Length: 248
Image (tube, rainbow, N blue to C red; front, side, top):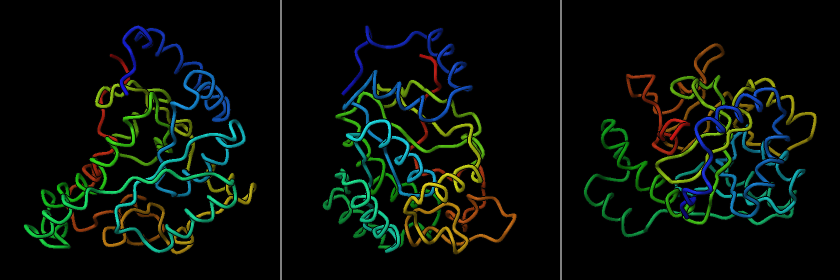
């Protein structure tokens, strides 16, 4: 669902909004999301620590907040467990989008089940089939998507604005935790007894698909456990967050 051009914020308005939100709480940002987009906003969640913290905030602002996830069919068992815990805790439906079985079948037939270990090009193919295509379907019903992106995650995420115009999907991308740290997120989860993925207690700061994620040593880059066999640390994105700049 593309946002009509007449309903889009101007570049100047978007800049002013971001300036204001830098001094706001995530809950205040989410209240704006509820007021402006209502049920046409979704939280896209991988159920990492920042995502469960963010949904707790969102649910407190809007008990009808929509929660969406991408099931790649290769997630850790612990991730499926926390999805169930969140569903029960907040009595909310989780909108689940999965890959096209035929596309997965063709990919596996041509490249193998674990094609991602054979080089970045193959890994990008797998991410596209299992994540990017389902995301397109998920966002077709949304005028805005809410994410747990933070600047301290590094790479291009260091430039993350709180509200961005997402040219790739013709909607808005809202990152209420953009200026939060990992420690702030963990403290929020602990103080509010939010269910979380137990892999975070086993050295996993970032959790994706099971075969593509491993624990990291203390002091290592939080993203170093993702696709660890790839040599470029600044290219460790799956394609979900490679979108246009905030202005249009």
